[in-house]
Length: 472
Image 1 (cartoon, rainbow, N blue to C red):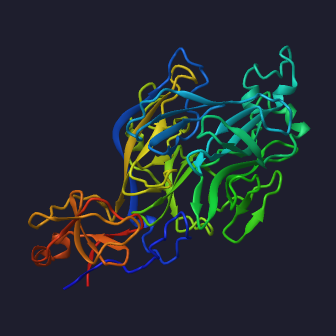
Image 2 (cartoon, helix red, strand yellow):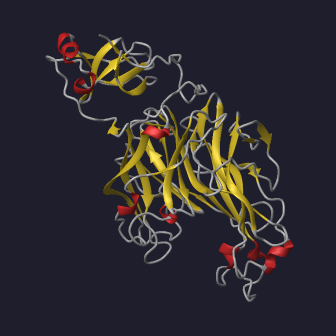
Image 3 (cartoon, rainbow, N blue to C red):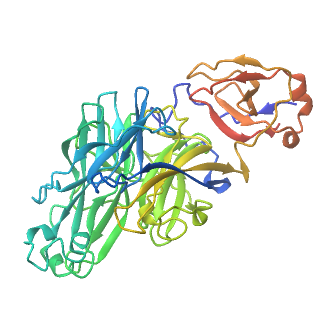
């Protein structure tokens, strides 16, 4: 009797960084869950003597520069913290960008959030940016429509997506251009925003991720009726480019790729309530794992898609255990939207931009805003992917003598047969796929005892986990 892992063979150089993922993948969200731990680990706390505008005001992004790992504290004053790893961010808080507060419309250069830093090499980074302009800027301080009055600023904003670059390893940033913006702020909106929000435009760019030599990022889009100011369309659009140093991006739909048009977003089906999107290639699910905040449900959700070039979202599901989290100095128990809880970061990812996750990763989130809007701290919480109602990382003791050590060559598959990695035992089919070996479930104790099991220290980069082994 032979243990078989699924034989959906990919080339050895296949990864989300250089190939589209095929439709043959069978693992779906229907037999997977994302579950949060209940222990929060402090990452960063605001210095009361520092600039009050240095704070986490967007999902946390991370990147590596050589041996250094950095996370971005994203606000209109943008800062970063660096260290040796995601679990050792012990460097000082370093300001890398101040918004110029240019009030000219439609330059969209008043307040800029560098939401999507992406490393091209150790010196060069690019970023998509959430850029805000406020109609109240047109009025003097003594006017009832001044930005300092009531909620005039929050109610009167329009947002654009702009692109930035850094040539000094992220220590400073300059604008490349405007990717997508509303070309007008309707004059009729002025009558509404002293009482209610007319916020609209393109906002909240996700992290950037590479698939088949194209760069992708999700963006939230809000459209309003030009005469009534009422919301007429909203949801997520998907941007793509082959040249990240260009301001020219395109919109991706399930049917085709479209040129960007001012004040027009081709919203992806089923995304009208989504915001704060992050995406990684999840090695356990063998799909892109997308975390987002559902505004009406007030829940952290996840879905998957086999491809970004042709997105096909599975039915979204709630992330488990989110309502019981106890976040210090937070508004109530559990999560709410200003916790920005969608950042999925895996310290085991080999990507400089943390584009991959496996069965265990971190979600970064911030506290907000029991005392005031600027009183925030950053935390991480462990998360795991669960398949078939069993954790992928279920511990299985190796039933063998002292195991032989074998260093897996990066980028190559493992030989056919049983092997151990960390505390678990697996079976490799020799073609880039492996499965969890569980003697009690697979009824293969004899096979396990009779074969010498190889121990490896590092999994190859492009090997795929197919769940629990089946008997054939």
